[in-house]
Length: 546
Image 1 (cartoon, rainbow, N blue to C red):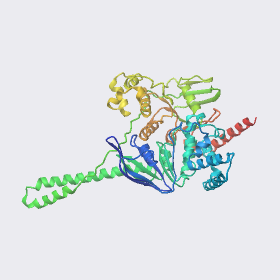
Image 2 (cartoon, rainbow, N blue to C red; image 1 turned 135 degrees about the horizontal axis):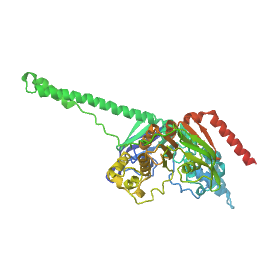
Image 3 (cartoon, helix red, strand yellow; image 1 turned 90 degrees about the horizontal axis):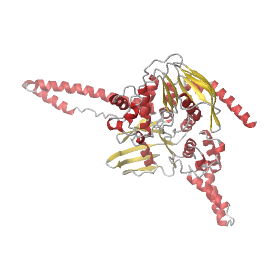
Image 4 (cartoon, rainbow, N blue to C red; image 1 turned 120 degrees about the vertical axis):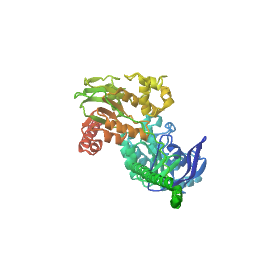
């Protein structure tokens, strides 16, 4: 068990947490939620000892081991991948290295033999002989193939490093597991594996995530940070949302009845306070009036942007035809003879671990890259808006947000453009920020503002939820579901794919595709997907043998 006892954290004059008391017990998974800036990551740092609270303390059941997801992706660059995973249990790793050092000594003494024997006994008690196989199993489950296990961390790309650090946190069955945004940079297959791991995990988990589907799958409890307090709810994210909304509704209804009673008493007092025969009754009602207290209903600190994609023109029957597109990048064929036709009712979710293939296809369809072979044709009634995965070049400018966005608006009126920014939570002076100083979440909201102001009938979106908070993701999800045009999109957010897509295209590792008209959940359960993957796997194995 881990608990926070009267924890207060002040940053300057602001109290980020005030007298927080909460216990996290064994066998439960707690989703820690709250608006951006509420202090979710900060609270995890207090729990794992990286940050000292201003007042109060954190206690852990004696003898229990705490593990957390490291955020420094360069910390282990000089270590092998498998060693980095085993470092998740630092004591076990230290024993391994100390044993190895003793056995390599040329002048091996009796004292060395006694020390080695003691280390071997502790090593066996910690199940050390299975450490490498357990670490490898975690890596494979997260999609890090065996060939990378002996590589140095610096030789991996960013997404692979994230997976290794996640495997490190999970390694060795920790008693308390703290995970800050563990699904970031994970593909949907790796997220599904992590969900099953945590569902079957018997100890204490505290997780911060913007992935609603993930929280609903793994969490038994929800800890909501709002107004410097943490309120604990039994149940997952959806249960918290429904419970919190119901509580507010009940408080409003109770206040309404109290206000009606107050009005009734005030009218009686006003009418009869001067009437001698009614004076006692008026006095009695005054006392009753003084006892009525309205419940204080604080509005949540959460802010939801308003995302509404409205196409200026209705889309025709001919939308997009893709014929035999192939593309090789750095000697690797990322698209191999890809063909499909898009209909006017299609909202297509592009899935699979081959993220380069998805991004490459979107760049080609947006006119930012040429295919090596094949072609594509947009229908004459279509207009496209593109949300790129990498927006670095877009924001490499000193233009103000409002001036940059005006370029994409048919109506060159600052007030009109500011209206779109206001919907996306850029109020007042925020609208005159320079593009290059924006945070990750602000950049995404600016790009979504551009998509709204362009009023296109086809949206191409490559991982639009990256850097967004839960409230913005919810607003985007609603906007995508309501959109009357065509959407081609890739997202790691399971709920967005499930609720938006009516057709799934999966990119396989060899650059080919599986194309099926279905919801995402139905697709994951389909026999056809399993069969085609098996066929691909067999053909890949045969190619290696040859």
